[in-house]
Amino acid sequence: MPSWEKQSVSPDRSGISSISKAEEELQKFKLAVENASDHIIITNENAVILYANKAVERITGFSQKEVVGKKAGTKELWGGMMPREFYETMWETIKNRKKVFTGEVQNRRKNGEIYTALASISPVLGDNGAVRFFVGIERDITKEKAIDLAKTEFVSLASHQLRTPLTAINWYSEMLLSGDVGPLSEEQSRYLKEVYKGSQRMVRLVNDLLNVSRLEAGGLIVEPVPAKIDSLIAASIKEGKFSVGAEKEIPVRFERSKEETKLAVDSELLNQVFRNLINNAVRYCSGRPNPKVEVSLDKRPVDGVNSLVIEVRDNGIGIPKLEQGRVFEKFFRASNAQKAAAGGTGLGLYISKTVVEKWGGKIWFESEEGKDTAFYVTIPLTGMVFQKGEKKLA
View 1 (cartoon, helix red, strand yellow):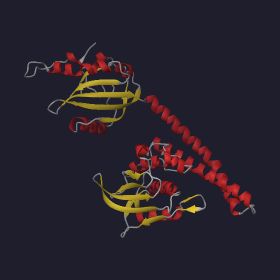
View 2 (view 1 turned 180 degrees about the vertical axis):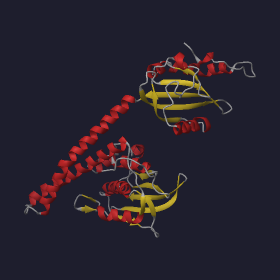
View 3 (view 1 turned 90 degrees about the vertical axis):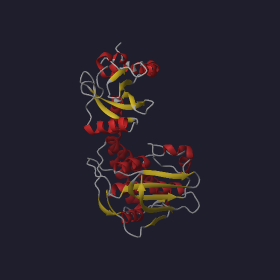
View 4 (view 1 turned 60 degrees about the vertical axis):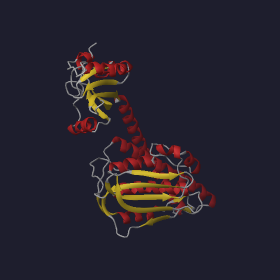
């Protein structure tokens, strides 16, 4: 089997060739990865392939003999299909910053078939801190991507089909409850209110599922226009009537800035994220004595970016420390949240995080179980990042 030992090298001052040293350093690694299921290569500092495991041929179609001695990531082999900016970022990360680079790449097999891989490239440094080798690992995720796309398309289709009957149920329920078609008895009204509440919950779930499918399919539209942020938030709170059930409305206090903040934002996306955060805050502080939700704005640098920071704070149940790392996962609800309030989908924060990052902002939280929670969302003071696309959120 051809191997990297056969590459020509120059002896170092000790009289021992540098490739012999490399063999000593990497021999155990080679033995460990030879039969790994992932495609693994070792290159020199100029990306010339010194070693390739058996999975390289299985995934790319190129034999070990064909790839050793050639440069990785070029059209001569399986690479060279990504935009120039992708490779510039990759080289800046692994060669200059000497950090691990991870990303999805489009590659081409020897037979011309295009496939998607999740790639990770790690620099191996010598004693002097200089890059000696790169270790590249790729996993073919073409099938996983196809399955995810099929699931997304199914959810989108099912959500669209469910919206029509739910709209009819809501409309007729509202007509009956308002007395437009005649008076209802107290018992009939009570039953109908439960039907209406259940239908509203289903509408929220369908909209959340539809939004997730749209976000994961890509192409979300972000259309920023100049707007007064304080006024947008105040209007959203006024129109929201945030409550738990029909009988209990939770006060939402907004501390307006002394000077109105004007930024270029997509008001629909901002409202979507803001309402998700407020709804969560209201839901999880409703059972507490004197429940309250406070909203405030502040301008300050966040990760080196001058930003408007929106804070939503509640005095609710808090988030258990051991579960805080999963808060933005799809369908995740903390254990105490499941006990405190029914009806949550576990999608609101996932949607919010995805949307905030699309517009160039950041979202995070601080929480202590049994005390309070504060969520923070940023908008760059230069405004949201404009993004072309085909889809708005539901």
